[in-house]
Length: 139
Image 1 (cartoon, rainbow, N blue to C red):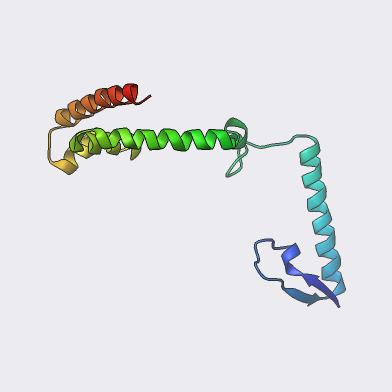
Image 2: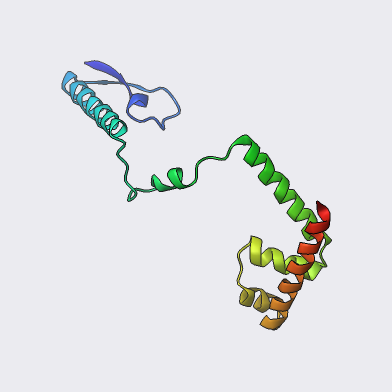
């Protein structure tokens, strides 16, 4: 009988679990582990990737991770945007936020507020114009 650590085969386990298995099973697990390692090594050496797998390789290539400087700039821009939204009239701010931040359609906003769709469109257009003026004066 051979003792194996299950964490080696199941990395998502949070606690160390050891298990006694027969020698044949230990050999099969060892061979399978080596084959898996060998396959991963070949993939890495030959730069093999597949865009068909989930979650996929493409996002890593298309969108590299943000640098710390970019993260800070993004947070500053977001705080400036929210400060500018706070300066808009409440109805415009609510509608601009719902449409551009929450991604709601203008017709959904109109239905939720029991108003005409054109009123929502005009309000969002005026809100964007006011937001543009506020942001010009902000910097």
